[in-house]
Image (cartoon, rainbow, N blue to C red):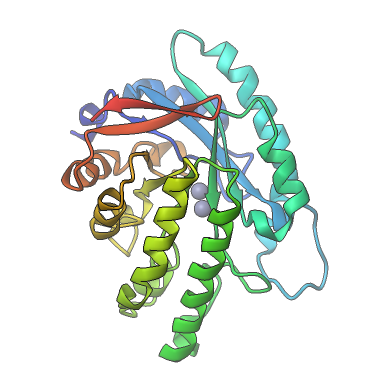
Length: 286
Ligand SMILES: [Zn+2]
Ligand SMILES: [Zn+2]
């Protein structure tokens, strides 16, 4: 039973109804985290800084996420109160998923400087001036165009990692959730091995880590983001900081895939999983 097997582990990537695309109240998520026996639990609501304010006519379609940056301070305030409320029952870590920091540096830096935060995931959901990978119709693109999108994805992510200011890189290989999972298009990422290795070296040098995002395991893609191969590469390059996150957008998904994620980490040679408190990495035995 997964419910028992994740006891003592962490789920450090989850969304509450402070995220425009998530359903459950923070209290409901916390109650579920207690039920699952998680050692540490983080709420990481969306803060897509490129959508801080509703923007008209910028050609980007991700209407659902407009304003998602603006909700982040409210999520942080609610989490800060909940840390008190659940003290002694749940080790709640105050987190945020900072999306596209380079696309609104002023707001990103405002969030990065927030002392209430324990943990920041840095995520890249969309290339500058383009739609979120979620929205792109890959069946209307040829393999060259898909390849160009991925080239931009890794290049912009590399720049994001060079700038830093977050704790772990969110869901590396996120576009595959849609390209491979939803559209069934096979992608060979070997041509990006060099830049991915460079991304890992940059993270390691900057004291940052990666997450194993287990959402892909319960979706059509059927694999973790990233999968074992890249987790191994990260380890081989000297990576020590790895976190586990379900990317749950409702309480029913909390903790899902965390046991498999822990197994991927073990197979890659990790003996410890990380969590962040007051923006500092701490470790729990796997
Ligand atoms: Zn994300
Ligand atoms: Zn997320």
